[in-house]
Amino acid sequence: MLKALSGNQSIVSNLSDARDTQLMNRLVGSHDKIIDVLDAGTTMRFLTAYFAVSGKNKIITGTARMKERPIGILVDALRTLGASIDYLEKEGFPSIETKGFASQKTDHLEIPGNVSSQYISALMMVAPTLPSGLTISLSGKIGSVPYIQMTAALMKEFGVTCQLDFDKKNIQIPSTSYHPTHVTVEADWSAISYWYGFTALAETANLVLPNVSEKSLQGDRVIADIMEWLGVQSTFLNNSLVLTKKNHLSNIFWDFIDCPDLAQTVLPVCAAKGISGEFTGLESLRIKETDRIAALQNEMAKIGATLTEPQTGKWVLTPGKISREPITIETYHDHRMAMGLSPWATLSDLIIQEPSVVNKSYPGFWNDMKTVGFKITEG
Image (cartoon, rainbow, N blue to C red; front, side):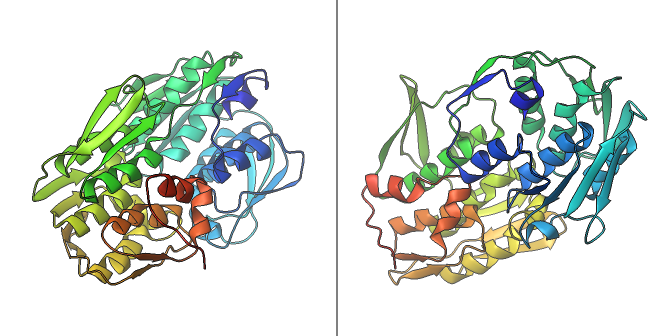
């Protein structure tokens, strides 16, 4: 999207082969009237802002699940700015039609800070193209702060400096032009997290992940800190990450407010490793590819683990124990359910339903499992 906003003169290297990434790359420059984002939530939100503010007439739609994922906060914000957007089906949800942007009506927006950071990132990225720039005020608790910081850092690489003040809860972006640049995409720490899961549950492990920088913009880099408690030592050596075993705690507490995508890696490890846990910051999991809280509860119950909410916003995990009997894992059309539960294969045979869901973010996942010694058959 930043490449498009800088006049398509920039070079982006090491772009992922993930389906969502390739979809975004294709759709951002599409001349088609109907834009089908499939099940890609980031693509839906970013392109809604991009097409709305650039005045393009587009119908943006997706899968049945995508049409259940709310977009009203973003649409309301864009309408306040001056965009013309219609809902084509259910109010507050895709499909939508962007119909033009006559003029900027305001240079100030207020939106909740505890909703998807993708709404905030989408508005931040289009803000410099507005005649008066934009100030975004965030109300309530601010979630996924590292993703907002990552957006600002990448915008700076394209020549736009945002002022982030989380104490005052506002973001200021000037009206200016993006500059062409050359960006190399980092290794994906969300994908790296699954290899921490394998290391945590394996009897012995020594994994080397190449081209991983110790200093990363990504919020999911925190998986290295979480997994210290769960029995994984991280060593950065010659631009590689080496994962080895260490002692683990018997119980942990973690607030996932800044890294909700890691919950599907961490909780299954705790459930299978006999580690009890107390967790907060899981609220956004309800509106992902599936209701991820319900999905985790269902699948972890298969090994006798429970995830309960004794008080609003506080979750308690009681671990279970994996037997040697094969376990069938439902994936709920969710790539992270498939990959987050796959480390259980260190302890038992698994049957993964709809394994192709990994194509969304990590198409080579099953092949990478084979390279470290797992036997995988398709049936």
